[in-house]
Image (cartoon, rainbow, N blue to C red; front, side, top):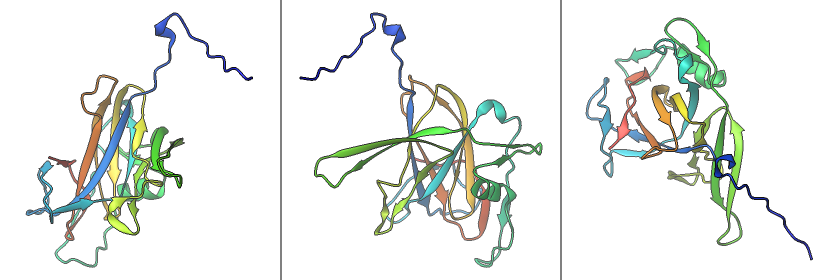
Length: 209
């Protein structure tokens, strides 16, 4: 017979707590107005859908000035011939973020958690791993559903202040400061990416109402 011995501490203060977690969601919104967009958006049946996205996290102390906000307006749908240096750094240089003062900072390493169903009915698999970003990926067979296995949108972070940047494949990005703690009333964060064929670049963070 095999026994499993579990040690318990008499001092509850010595029990290590898991870092608080946040959950990320992203949507695409069809707005009635052009840039600049409203800060909140109501999702109707035909006005929004789920969006793929990447989220990078930075120590708030490293944000010593505004981030570089590239804004490109077009008179025609195509071609879009302007390049966003900030977007390219984020997507091609592993989340490097350029600030207005010229400095470039790296994202912090985060821990992501994923829950998904296995091939065994009723069994749920949990995967934790370190990464430079969190990601939402759509199911190739259903564009209105996320891929449960590849999506990593639960993030565990030590308590503190962070700057979060979200990017999607439509050449748009946004960022905002967040506070992470065990006392958070709501640990869910979402962003709405505007569907706008006449604008690329930075936009102020839009939340789903």
